[in-house]
Image (cartoon, rainbow, N blue to C red):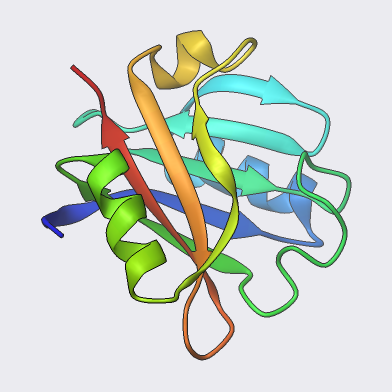
Length: 130
């Protein structure tokens, strides 16, 4: 597997309003997508920070052991998934691709795969597709 860096960070919080104000006003980060209990912030280098409130898009319990989820960029998401499967790593759902309404915020050439690390935490591999 060819991990090239961290390009995404997901933060789950019970203080969604306070955190969204903190990111917008204190850190000066620009939202590129906003919905109920979910915001995608775009950073100048193309990386993303996603803020998830209690009623955000993931099911209850998803963030229980991982309120902070890093997304590590890989060269080939399909190959990375196969390597995870071969290593016996628990995959959390299928490989996802940017879909409406997130296409504009993430780009249509973006894919990700959630997995469970040996300690139970959720991690993500992501790729910018050609």
